[in-house]
Image (cartoon, rainbow, N blue to C red; front, side, top):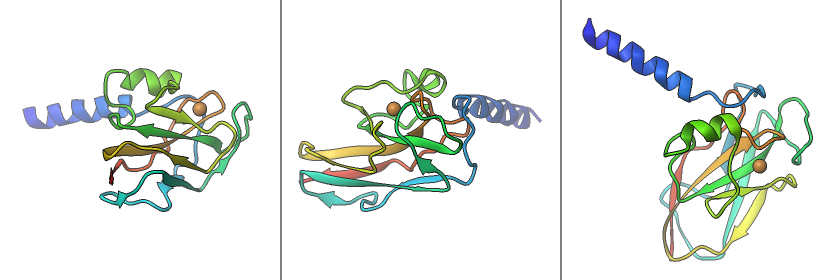
Length: 146
Ligand SMILES: [Cu+2]
């Protein structure tokens, strides 16, 4: 009984944390890496192609239903986790070395990455850079740059 209660609380907390901003998303939407898979070994510069299904890409500032622009999270915890996890889901993603915005509607990038392991995750953001109410995120992949 106690375990069930704890599980219920944990589920509730997880649901609360895993809510993005106010812009609705197609619940079926998917964002993914087209040309990279978890565990890949690559050479720099690394081309990264962003895939999106069930929604469309729109540049920053364009408010159109079921659209957003791509963000690439590099070498940081998965969206919603880490120190600013709750804030980034509610108020939007920062722009720094670990958070790239593709506000022009770009669907790929070529990056110089230092040798070693890097984690990558794609996140769709709305016109104001806030993840959608149902966040549209890829899995986190780890690649090794030779
Ligand atoms: Cu953005």
